[in-house]
Image (tube, rainbow, N blue to C red; front, side, top):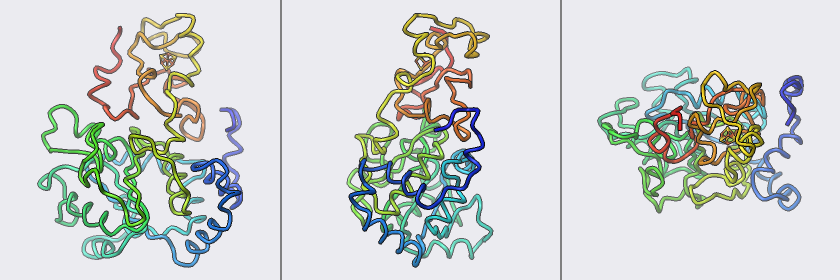
Length: 319
Ligand code: SF4
């Protein structure tokens, strides 16, 4: 990944071959070499049939969609064009309204993406139908994979925090307990459990590369929390640019010292990097420009953690 000064690289459209290399990195290491013929077949399928994608939103502030639209590696345009995605339903970006929009759901999606947590039937509806009902119905006829984008869809997130007056939960987990809306035994027609891509918001690279890998038939290794292991195998803390200050016990004790130029670790301002697994500290955000604990100058709030926000609260507390 280029450093923060090398923005030009991101403006170059990925060629198909480069794109496939990126996608190949999501699953088994030598995927491209081992399964080249299968991938060519999958690409031909995508190119001739189109891959039907439905993006359903529950209790969401659309933050994961905004994050996705800022993806740069690849960006969403490149992903849609390279994978020949046929996006049938996506409330934030679709032009269709009313009955015409709802009729787009009368399909068997190849991929069902869910953004936002899923509340009880009386709290969230689309086209006058409870979202929970639509999610169950669509998941039951999804051919390849159901993907929960963001901590809310994956584990419940903020709407399911303490109090939870809407009986909200994640798609296949409620916090760290398997179950959620679809139940612990749910698998897609292709035999996959729900693929969780937590984060508040989800990282656009995680979303686009995972979608691409699933569509192309890549064998994604999921961890015990249903996440692609590649992105979530290390703690934020272990990859943090401030790790040296932590080891030297140079701790910021006031929020005016959070700028990285002070060369302080943010642990004593409530940083949850030691508890949270994600590659966001090195992958960074906004096309590799920045990360919270890095130039962002903010303690990690643990937004990728299945217990967010309750287990991470109170945020920004001095310890
Ligand atoms: Fe760890 Fe947070 Fe300190 Fe970085 S700022 S070294 S993640 S405690």
